[in-house]
Image (cartoon, rainbow, N blue to C red):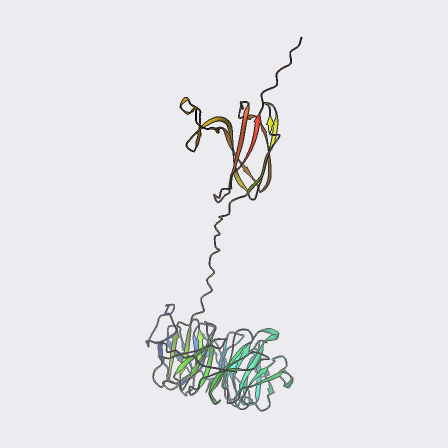
Length: 468
């Protein structure tokens, strides 16, 4: 599967020094630091600095602080180092002709110790494996190195391989070692628990792949400058390699950065390509003319790029993790639904002074209920109003007017409510006559129910019987 390249030109600023911890926005070249020899592979050390192997005679190592301060070293037991990594023992380990060497970042020249491994005839990258060992590859050999006893190394042959870069993907029993096989045009996956033929899986990508880099989960990325057209790619175990063409750029070194994407150094393109795990590619420029980006490593939110031609280390800042998705606050639903008031009734509806009745109503939700008692009296119509009769209105149309006799409020739950009533309002007995009860309800959001009405009659007290 081939994917087209989407290229964007990012503006970049060259500066001699950028203080660490300063927010610099989008990725850009923001520092150039000169070294005395040709810079090669690099790694973020346990001390927080970037350590670079130098391909010269006078100096073999360079330490670059996050602020860009460069210190060079020439340990006696290190010569012509190629690969570099941090071991499980928190020491830095390098590969070199016929062996490896380890040293403490606190004192590289005083602590460097080499171990002879004759099978390392063509030193390449080195990586700390998921099994607690160091792994490197040379020609058709993959070599396991216990960090505590490196002289007890073991070697396994991968038929037809011409090894280049090596990386580790995953942890524990699911962790695997991946190797770029330049000679075979393959990416080789090796089970560290069973590195023999039965534990080897091959992915054909053609050309001559140079470097590999473990990504999130079980994905791995690779650079293939020996292909036509040149490309980079991604592989998931059991899947088909997914290719992104980068013609005439010479893609080489790879780093997985803090933004969760792969970054590729492009020697001929004089640029970097950023490739997301989903396959979206963009290009970052801004390096000195013909400086030859070859290798790179991540340190915090920055990348440190080895510029092979100009013998410099470039610092790219602004490689920030993606912002977490913004979760909108939970929407506050406005309650605009009024409560429903139903099944209103008073039983019995004819009362005398000492009688008790039951008022019943049903609510669809909890609400404050207003109970208003009004007495029905004779009236005369004046316009639309029914008013108290007067001599002036003696010929007006008769009507029934209602006069407030009392009011109360109660809190009621959803469902049916029953309340006991007598023909009294407080301590005052209701006069004989006809009455109505207006019932209204309002919920907590202020929505009002449609009011309901029920009627009742207060009878005259029974006359006491006369005793003869």
